[in-house]
Length: 245
Image 1 (cartoon, rainbow, N blue to C red):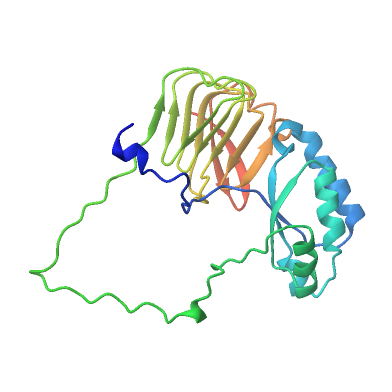
Image 2 (image 1 turned 90 degrees about the horizontal axis):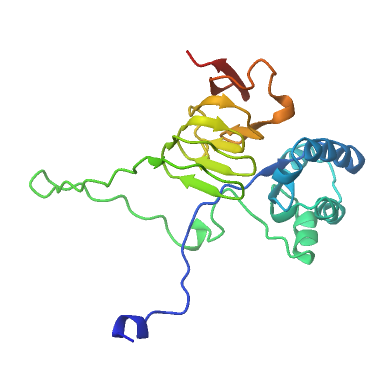
């Protein structure tokens, strides 16, 4: 065993970004919420099963509408969702969430800026002192083999698949997605929130398509678009599917 292996720590913490669905509630009516969730789950059962979820109550808080937070969390768990955080909650809801081991999230880091003064702006260096520090570009990902059922592929830039994406497979990209074979699984472009991304495929048979979190499942895709070459974009929070010319 070399010295490097001997002194390697058993664990380490790293900051990372994970794409997690957010459920934004605009009504406190649990009966209505349950019915709508069941409709969504019926459209893509495998996509929603055991899916992590962030619960956003900001719209309810803005209108001073009360929601039974404990019952809502129990409802989500009964439907096989895995709530991992809550935001936009009032104080009572935050306390309820804490009793259910649900973290309270914020749009800002919890290590408040009030705890320490804001960092001073960097001092502008003179021309003689300036040093060019080129950043390494993020490379697109090229997959030359089929993506099989159960596999997940994630690209920090564009993702290009020259073969088939099988049913049950999932391809995710922070940029555009290009599939030159049949797209039968799930394709999620703009995973970091870029609404200008596109999905291009030669044969659309997808279980689910998504751009920047806006998605359609197979039943919502027009029959005229299926089994054809298409390009998919996002316009006014709706997916637009056009023939690929």
